[in-house]
Length: 271
Ligand SMILES: NC(=O)c1ccc[n+]([C@@H]2O[C@H](COP(=O)([O-])OP(=O)(O)OC[C@H]3O[C@@H](n4cnc5c(N)ncnc54)[C@H](O)[C@@H]3O)[C@@H](O)[C@H]2O)c1
Image (tube, rainbow, N blue to C red):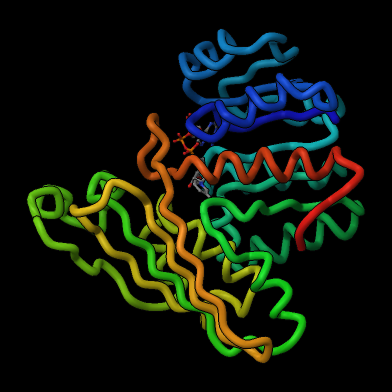
């Protein structure tokens, strides 16, 4: 499988290395607006990609060379790169899943995929329980609740929080309680998991989210509670933050790699 990757940050680096090491996949191109990140990543690879770009200019010309595009850049990159890839009939794997909270964009992604008969892969990311939610969703789901706790550094740069105040606090602070739709709008770099759960379950309006800054922890913790006809399940994952980007959990990169390996494998385990 020939793969092109948008984004050479915390997740893109892990995915590129995994593709480079897997004999069933080939890394054809890398795109990132920061040349130094592309160069650093390339220096870690055994086989250098054929093409490198620092912007979306001329991006369409690269598409005939791949089978699948991986987006691991930003919400805006979903419009900029994923839509052209789908229009060109390429499969896509999307990490910035928060972008799909926009109903119009989601509809456009689904329409292009259907017209061109291509696949859109959305990995479970940093959350655990998507498998049970999908299975339970074949029957009726009554409620989906997500509680996300992160150390204050996970909120640095967010324009809706006073980071200095947060960083000095010694007690956990609830930053948000409400729908997944609103959570993703206010914390776009933090709660992609809320978007993934919504897509797998009962939608962005009904999925309930709580976001907490907690100075007593050093992990990104996601607790999920799902109730439905099937019964009830609760999951808790204590994610190790990625060293190069503390907003991102290491498991998110691993989940994308597992999805890619699932695509090129003959046997698939799990829902
Ligand atoms: N699905 C999940 O569970 C999950 C979990 C964590 C992160 N994410 C999302 O995955 C994405 C990548 O995360 P990360 O931690 O690797 O981020 P990062 O900031 O470490 O890296 C992103 C890279 O993409 C590049 N980039 C961003 N927009 C671009 C554009 N339009 N054109 C070219 N380059 C662009 C940046 O320069 C940067 O190098 C983010 O959107 C993040 O919110 C999803």
